Amino acid sequence: MKPKPQGRRTFIKAIAGGAVALGSSLAGWPGERQTPPPRVVKDGMAYRPLGRTEILVSEISLGSSPLPDPDLLRAIIDRGVNYIDTSHNYDNGNAERQIGRLLKDVGRDKVHFSTKFHVEPRDTTASIMASVHGSLRRLDLETIDVLMIHGAETAAVLIDDRVLEAYERLKKEGAFRFRGLSCHANQDEVVRRAVECGLYDMVQVGYNVFDIQGSGGEIETYPDYLGTSGLRALIELAHSKGVGVVAMKTLKVGGLRQDLAKYRTGAVSICQAMLKWVLADERVASAVTEILNRQQMEEDLGAAGAGLAASERATLDRYVRENGVDYCHSCAACRKACPAGIDTTAVLRALAYHESYGKADRAKETYASLLGEGRVPACRDCGACEKACPYGVAVRTRIRKAASLLA
Image (cartoon, rainbow, N blue to C red; front, top):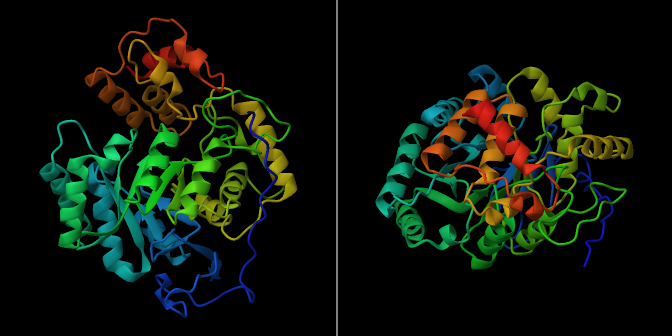
């Protein structure tokens, strides 16, 4: 059955009066089991509950790969951003160290944050715990708000005995409050399992205006390019079970970065419109962005608490039509179909770092790690990947381009 397009979601209006008192969690709401309002506003920033956790997070949250300079970081927090996403391996651990210094400066109660650990075949419960203990030292804290598996790409890792034992032992130590995961590929399997197993409090997934259709099944292009998304069904499932959703890769562009100035809608840039689109989904708690200068700060924070105008949506439609042809949705269908065992999804993600994000060093490091793990063997040029791709991406061309640019 073909998916049906959905109409534009109605953005929730601010609480009457424009602002309400805001604490660091839901504990301040009258009545222990009273459902809090879905969105509250204070001093120009809007906040939403992160699923069933007791955390209210700013609609715009800060990614830390890389972090802004200390002065800008402080300014971002002063503007109301209260959630930072980091990991043990961002900038060789220096992102966590910088966040630790920030928390000492602004106060622990003003910022919530998540950090992550990787799970490799060689890992043990002890090595996972050691990674988290290292994060705690760098952050100079006793407790992490959300402890996430970094880049979960199979359902099996979510219930892996090593992972579950590490979580249990770390919980007894008071090392973290809530469990979560980030997912870069194979979202349908991973997110569904995370929600259904009941062990995870939040998921962080790539979600942006290019997510127009689900993985697999018959493909149909609608006049409204943004009308339907396979991820939306997963987000609804998570929301229905109280699992918080944080959107990442929110400003990802298709293929080589274009001249984005031509996609402005009046005073609203295409990036600001992209963030508004993500936040128009009431089930998303926050959109993670990287903010590296004052202009980006004004641009990104301007999306908080603002609705998406019809003219801005029309511009997004045009942008997706003109730039979406080479956008990888990370569904992993090509990877599963490859007879040579190439991790095509990871290769295309490395290429996106180079083309779309301007992260040449990270792109080469990511690609080199794949070579080291034997995940980029020679392509047989059989075309199985492209036959499996539900979006028509020229996967083989993209793989060859990655090899020429990144090897």
